[in-house]
Amino acid sequence: MPTPAIDRAFERRLATLVNGGGAPLLQGGLRGVEKESLRVTPDGHIATTPHPRALGSALTNAQFTTDYSEALIELVTPTFTTSWELLQYLCDMHQFVYRHLGDERLWATSMPCRIDSDDSIPIAQYGSSHVGRMKTVYRHGLAVRYGRVMQAISGVHFNYSFPEKFWEPYAALRASNAVGSALRSPAYFDLLRNYRRHGWIVLYLFGVSPAVCNSFLRVRGETLPQLSQGTAFEPYATSLRMSDLGYRNRKQAGVSVSVNSLEDYVRDLTRAISTPYAPYEALGVNVDGDWRQLNANLLQIENEYYSNIRPKRVAHSGERPTKALIRGGVEYIEVRALDVSAFDPVGVNQAKLRFLEAFLALCLLRESPPIGDDEQEALDRNHVIVARRGREPGLTLQRDGRPVRLTDWANELLDGMTGLCEILDLADPARPYTQALATQREKLRDVARTPSARLLHELESTGESFFDLAQRMSSAHKAYFLELHPPNPARLDEFQIAAEESIAKQQAIEASDTGSFEAYLARYFEN
Image 1 (cartoon, rainbow, N blue to C red):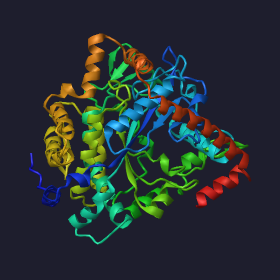
Image 2 (image 1 turned 45 degrees about the horizontal axis):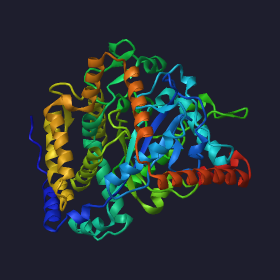
Image 3 (image 1 turned 180 degrees about the vertical axis):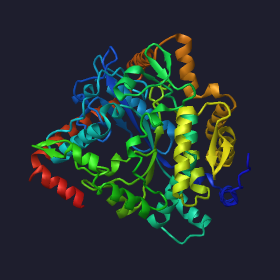
């Protein structure tokens, strides 16, 4: 196999950070999580009940909301400077939710529960306001374009921004006179490009969706090898959720969005949301008062673009994501590639988040040349290959037009993270980042330690179907949170007050609306 060129620029930057006491510069980045989970009935079917009123308004409660489906709860944490605080808060959120679910539970895996039909998945409802109707119509558009069952797949999104104190030394590292968004946005796009190059390693290390319930495939019109009665799988898969079978949508193959710069990214997304597409025009938009989709363009809105990582900025009310980026530049990065882990009650753990933090630093600090069309095609193939065959012995990927073994490339990436983890560990005798990195090295030495292999081993050793295993784990998680003591009463009171306030806020929005829904949409897309 060819030996890759050594990234001398990265080595210099890392050495400068170390020699300059780099730990305080990298420590304290802001991190948050968005965790999706389907509400299911005791017999493991998707719930058809409304979003629990005790959780507040899905439209206006920023922390307890819904994603595609009325049954797809999304828990959105604030940002924290440590992973343990973040996960404690996420635990508190789960305790609050489970106190208001009745006999329902949250499904413990990314791939969905037993699905009767596409129509059995209820679309999220956000009330009668213009903004609420827009959110629901957008989801109807997703349904007619891609089917509902794909939207019932859950995930964990990791939001991260580097600490404020990092940026001035970073400018010196790059010999740059830029400040503010002129410095940060290009840096975050360096990160985005390198994540596209190397992000497949996240699927190998953390993917935990190698198997699915047959009902999912039946509704999708797909087939896979059978593992057992009721369960289909790919023998070496890591994350079917992130493959062309799941979250990575084949129908968007014609939508190409560059991350070579903020300007290119905004240009390509703007083009996609303003370019009519004949197959979607044939579906109709507003047919005799029945809104089937927001428009008939390649993308209805920017969020329809499925990507495993996104540049983000908190938008003002009614502001489109691309306009927010133009206004203020990139504020943080959203990593969308994590499966919900059935082995962690909150779906994620500290070792995973610490690894991702160090990995994002690696992607930021390494050289990151522009990505051309040919390279992007190769990167897309690498991604799908690892999602569907990542644990295959001797698997090779393409790098710079040449084959390289997955394990060799992965070890090179982990080697590059060693110094970053040491920086992040400085002054902490427990060395949690180095320990998180060591845990991932073990998965390269022994593929059986990967979560995807562990899940398949669990299925094979117990004789359970995927549905039965996920049902058992979902029940166990519910019992865990209901029995967990002590709950944080102040936090639970805080959640309850926010929920009540969100309901009043939705009612105020609905009462203040003026004009027609059509005029509201026209203003939104003009902004």
